[in-house]
Image (cartoon, rainbow, N blue to C red):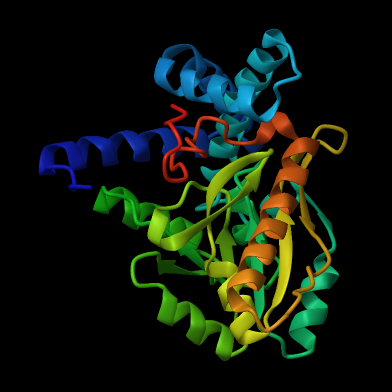
Length: 305
């Protein structure tokens, strides 16, 4: 995708910086409330995204009523806005202030793996505050490297990069990432990946996601098989009862090795996808339904969107 021109670059940067500055000037609780309101406003204005969301929800939850799916989609926008409110404080709030809005489960799963000198792959999906799944670990003294797609606007990218890496995290550019990721794991490092995005044909295989074949990255499975890294699911949904984001690191997912790498990769990728799906089913109002998850189709199959 072509980078924006100079004027557009500055306009987009000024808009993004202004929004984050206004939200960060508020107490964090209010920032998240205002963010939710912004999400509601976006829901009313973003017709194309609503259309994508309705299509996704119909695929994933065919048994739900239209009203139930509309409510889930509306909540999805509010959830994204709440994350924006949280993200706005990543650059300025103290470690203690940010941790006061989080609850933790299963952090010992990561600590045990690291204490054993193991390389670790943490994976998540776009559920709740997915930015917190990596940023939160750096708050806890467990910085990691994580895979990103660089934003087209270089000034916005620089701003977001500074925020994400404030407490020691490092990003890895998705373009040409295979060698750096392998190096990180062979050196016993920790790597974070998102595995619930539509992926281009040459980087993906089709596995079921909510019962519908979805083009899914096979990179995590190959890395795990070739490095013996410990693979841990991590999610950061908003928990209404706690009034906090629950950062949940689940126990390791075991890898079956049969000697047939292609089949092992397919089986393990399917298991990873199922793990994300199970978490989405727990918090369906907090997944990013406006992403065209099923855009790439198997050969001969008609388009979904």
